[in-house]
Amino acid sequence: MFDRTLETLEPERLLGHQWRRFRGMAEELLASNQFVGRKWRAAGVRWVEDLRSWDDFRRLPLTEKEELVDDQTSNPPFGTNLTYPLERYVRVHQTSGTSGSPLRWLDTQESWEWWAHCWGFVLRGAGVGPADRVFFPFSFGLFIGFWAGFEGALALGALAIPGGGQDSPTRLAWMEALGATVLVCTPSYALHLAEVARERGIDLSKLPVRITVHAGEPGAGIPAVRARIEDGWGARAFDHGGMTEMGAYGYECTQQAGLHVNESEFIVEVIDPATAAPARDGELVLTNLGRVGSPVVRYRTGDHVRLAEAPCPCGRTFSRLEGGILGRLDDMLIVRGVNVFPAAIEGVVRRFPARSRSSERGSLTRSAFWSRSGTRLARRDCRRRCGRASASGSRWRRCRFAACRATS
Ligand SMILES: [Zn+2]
Image (cartoon, rainbow, N blue to C red):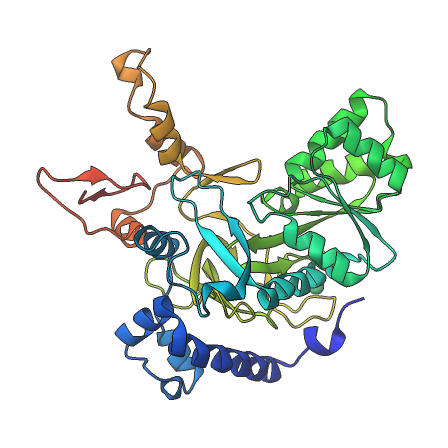
C-alpha cells in the first residue's frame, strides 16, 4: 500500500532529495518572502549561494509561533510570511485562537494539493485504500482540522463522506447507511460516538468500520486510549501528527511503533529546548518543503519527542518518534482537539467578579501549569520561549507561560 521507492530511500539519497527541495524553495523565499527574507538576512544569508551544506541549514534561525503571531498582528490580516501576491492564494484557515492570538494561514492551489498528498501517507500508512468509504464527522469551518484529510481521501480514490452539521446519532445512522469503513476524527469524539452508540443499543462491531484515524489530540498515541477506541469500535485505531501552520507530517504504519515523520515532505530535527543543540530526546523542529507560498522553516513545535534508534519493522527509513508526541514542552492543555493555554483560562476567569476567598484566588495559572507535569519551566528557558526580556524592579508582569517575569 505504501510508496516503497520513496519511503524506504537510503539516508544519503533521502538527504539529497530534501536538499534539492529545500534549495529550490530557499531561492524563491529569498526573492519574495518578506518574513523569511528578514530573518535570514539578519543571520547573514542573503543569497541562495550562501546555503551550501546542511551545516548552513542548521545555522538558519529557528522560527517560533510568537514571531508568526506578532507578524500578523503588525501586518494584518495575513502577515508577511507570503511568497506570492495575495491573489495567488485560494484557501484560508485559522487556529482556534484560544490563547487570544489566532494564527491565519493561506494556501495556494499547489500547497493545498500538497496537503492532500501528505494525507495520502497518513491514510495509506493505516491501510486505507481506494475501496474504502471514509467518514469525517467534522464541522468543516475555519479550523483546518480534517479539511485536508477529506482532500487526501479524495486524492487516494476513496469515497469521502462529509459528516458536518449533524448530531452524533445522525452521524452513526449515516455511517451505517453508507457503509463507512474508516472513521477520521479526534480520539475523544471517537470515544463519544462509541458511548452514544452504546446508549442507543447500536452494536458498532456490526458496522463495517475497520480503521479509525485520529488527530487534534494525542490520545490515539496513548495505549490505554487507543485500546478503548479499538474496543468500542472493533477496529484498529491510528494516530496522526499535524499542525495548521506546518502540515500533515506524522503518521503511523501498521506496525504502530510510533509516528513516522514524512521526510519526503518535511525536514525533521530534534533539539535540546534549552540550548538548541541536536538531541535524541527533546523538542520537535520541522521544516515543510511543499508549502512554498506560506512556509515554515526550522519551526519550534513545542512538542516533546524522542527519536527511535532502531529501524521500523515495516521497512520505512523515515524517522520514527517513539510513543508519538510525548507532551507539550510549554504544558499547554489540549481540550477536545483545541489548544488551551492556562494563562488564557485565567484571562477568561478573571473577567468575572471573584466569589471565593482571597486565599483561593490568583493561583489558577500556576496550578494548571504545574498540574500537567509536576514541574515548571526554568525561568531562563521560559524567557527564551516567551521571547521577552527578563525584568526586575516595578515594571514587570508574568509572561503567558507563567514561568518568568517579563517587561510589559
Ligand atoms: Zn513503520
